[in-house]
Image (tube, rainbow, N blue to C red; front, side, top):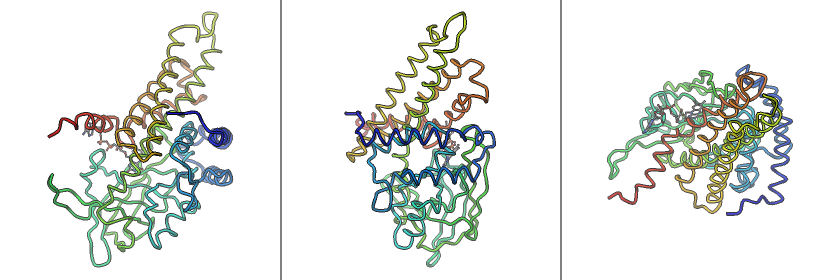
Length: 386
Ligand SMILES: Cc1cc2nc3c(=O)[nH]c(=O)nc-3n(C[C@H](O)[C@H](O)[C@H](O)COP(=O)(O)OP(=O)(O)OC[C@H]3O[C@@H](n4cnc5c(N)ncnc54)[C@H](O)[C@@H]3O)c2cc1C
């Protein structure tokens, strides 16, 4: 493994870091307090990201994206991870699932997201189907050239009202050697399409300004041309996003840990009690040592997963380990940071309390820590299965 950055990567990281500090950080506190990103702020971040060439960096050049490798994308996610997701999401990285668009879908959905004209949401989770995706009940029943969709999705997040949903629904049941298995299909459904209602959901404690939506489908009739990818292959399509998405969560957690470590180190070196800097007390300095060590380990795991992805060898296990370790290490780092800052760590004036709150979601979305442990333990035990 060689994690020395190339000259191009160093330049990219430096310019993105400056962008994040100048164009995003100043708006974090305001967006968090208001639990929404003011429209003009979101638009400005989007426009500046386009001017700087950061927009749609994750997609291939052939569709107008940045054409970057996974390792470089990991570095981008790490820098963007330093700030609230509600704001960094305006530096759009449209989901790779859109690469499955065909025919007229390409212009209407893929190109529109790459150009910033439209914004998608990824609608998998339901009130009764969270970790257990296969218990989903949203159905799309074939009727001539159409599908009729009924069901509800929740916790579908987006920095602003999405223009369309990539919706996952059950389109049938297959017999497999392990018994019956639901056929799940992905659909592209426009906001405002008859029978499709999208409502603002609850405000989360973490990432308060990154809003969640409830999606209601009531006899929503869509043409079969709205199927994304192949009928019945929705989960296979989703998995492409889910695995890499977990590595990006890991990379973002590393960015947050770096920011917490930098802020905590400076505070420990300058805040004085009992006549000396609190960093001179081992109770404080050892926390910094733990934060630095765990950040280093998390960075190595994330970069390892990215490198494996670039070689086409990344497994679900690599992604699960990177997400599990980085998100849990972030939780410990955020708690340590609050402790190092003392009472000031809980005050709105500083970003520490917000980062502590924001850190909590990382162990839940994109698969909870328990689900990651399932994936990892299954891969360990598989060799003994008969
Ligand atoms: C702010 C926010 C944004 C989100 N954005 C999106 C989005 O854009 N699109 C989308 O589709 N989803 C989204 N989600 C949903 C997210 O992915 C789910 O919340 C997550 O997968 C967990 O599902 P759940 O909340 O229903 O918890 P549950 O699945 O009900 O889990 C509750 C607890 O039970 C545990 N548990 C469940 N099953 C097992 C098991 N087999 N073994 C051990 N423990 C288990 C879990 O680990 C957890 O601790 C978002 C969620 C939030 C909070």
